[in-house]
Amino acid sequence: MRVKASSYPYVAWALLFVAIPLGLIVYFSFTDAAGSFTLDNIIQAGIYSNVIIKSVWLSVISTVICLLLGYPLAYIMSRSNPITARTILLLVMLPMWMNFLLRTYGWMTILENNGILNQFFGLFGLGPFEMINTQGAVVLGMVYNYIPFMILPLHSVMSKIGNDVIEAAQDLGASPISVLSEVVVPLSMPGIKTGIIMVFVPAVSTFIISQMLGGGGNQLIGDIIELQFLGNAYNPNLGSAISLVLMVLVLMVMSVSGFLSDDNLEERVL
Picture 1 (cartoon, rainbow, N blue to C red):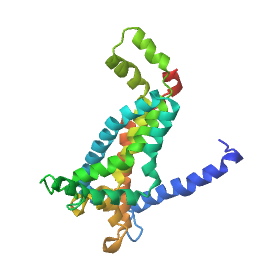
Picture 2: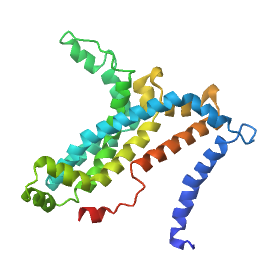
Picture 3: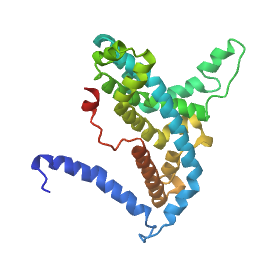
């Protein structure tokens, strides 16, 4: 199969920033420091199975919360007039204009023992509550930082569902719950799948959020991978093996969610 000349830049980009890095990860995963083939790195990655399970669990919780919060908002945006929809979209995207670290650091000042929330509760003689350095704080940070990635694909799909489709269902006697469960949700399923992937993938591999909001006792698999490439624990072979395991796990989640299927959105909406 011949590649058109116009696609050469994209092929070069894919080779330099996708194929070659992935090839290096696979190479280091199955070799030792001397470059000899070994399976020890993959076996050692199993030591962190509990961390992987915790990372997946917290990511699933964060993804579900993002879906529960983002779905109604995306539906409201899709049914609103253009000015209202653009205003809501601006408010959703506004925090994204700020640096990721600054947004997360802001939550540290809110959740810490002498932070804004505990000072507020103190006015009523409550607290201080331990909110920082907990799994709940990690989930909160994930939801806050990644919920736009759930809202945007949902809004994109829902905005293509015409009002005539909903009105037709209502004219046929469907209740509001039936319209939602039998019309809106099935037609918005591609957006749900995309949103789940776009939230779950960065959440399961994050390390800054867990470091800043979770403390040392709530390390995720991203923290373990980072440690293998920094400081005295430098071991790029083990780090690559853990990364490979995480990559396979993400691909499995994508397959289960149906993200890799060939759904035709236009046929489902029109």
